[in-house]
Amino acid sequence: MDLIRASRFREFPPRLPEQPIFYPVLTEEYATQIARDWNTKDERSGFAGYVLRFQVRSDFLQKYDVHVVGSSGHREYWIPAEDLSELNANVIGEIEIVSEFYGQ
Image (cartoon, rainbow, N blue to C red; front, top):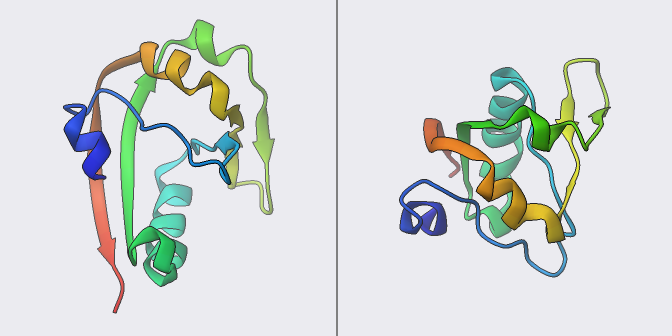
């Protein structure tokens, strides 16, 4: 979150080498499940999860398929890490924090 704040809520930071794909999800419900139920239990996430809302130009997203993982409500894009700067260039407005969750 610190890197997103440092960008003035305009872009996502580069992926780590072990993170070859950026997975923006399509519903707030799914994002909440990830942030609350998974990230708060994950040391690498700092035991914190955030639900973020942002808009991306549709012509950029048309290059990517929506993937369903698990249940039909688990829909997400798979954007290769090397395309993240292009995604950032296509974010409309600011990245908004919708909710925050913290573990033990």
